[in-house]
Image (cartoon, rainbow, N blue to C red; front, side):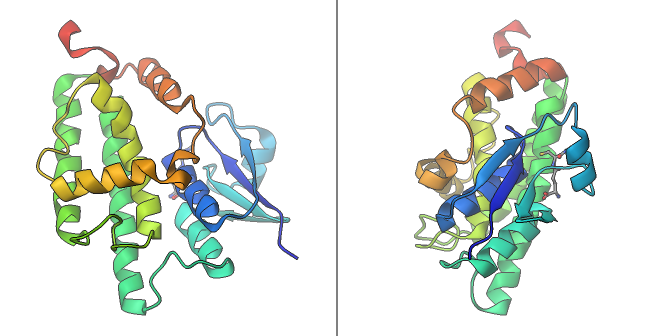
Length: 223
Ligand SMILES: N[C@@H](CCC(=O)N[C@@H](CS)C(=O)NCC(=O)O)C(=O)O
């Protein structure tokens, strides 16, 4: 019998999105429970060893760390999203790590209080995307060509941030990476990517920028 799956989520968490995208790609039923990370409920603190989202509850077993959750889902459900060869799989894991490094730069970007800090973080993101540009399959539409992979699930949440940021100011992050731009557009149309967040995601992200006192919250003309 298939296990009951519950994804313990936060509305803005990009790591949660990786797991949600993987679950949606696999087409299995799952429940979502949202927590407020500023006021972590006791049950969440008890279940989450690192106090972080996502958690995936598999019946009464709790998995944590998005990469682990995505690989567990991929190993146990049909429709592989990781390459079958060990070498290629290892290469994909490296790019998933790169997406985590970019998410760390994005955190700096979305919390920077001034223009200089914001653009410095944007430059870090751009430099990493220029490396990704060289690794992308030449024909697309996905990272590795015609089939969606866990690398796509890892990068889609990175690109989603910029859908909100780009509407505020163009930070120039995508100017030099045409293949990444095409990849970003393809992922934005992917049903699993669309369905991984609630419809109010952009409003929630803008509210986050406001609460953090981010430079990005201010329209550039007000600077
Ligand atoms: N390496 C973790 C990162 C997860 C993570 O950083 N989650 C953030 C939200 S996006 C979190 O729960 N932060 C709360 C905290 O650190 O107190 C993963 O891949 O799952």
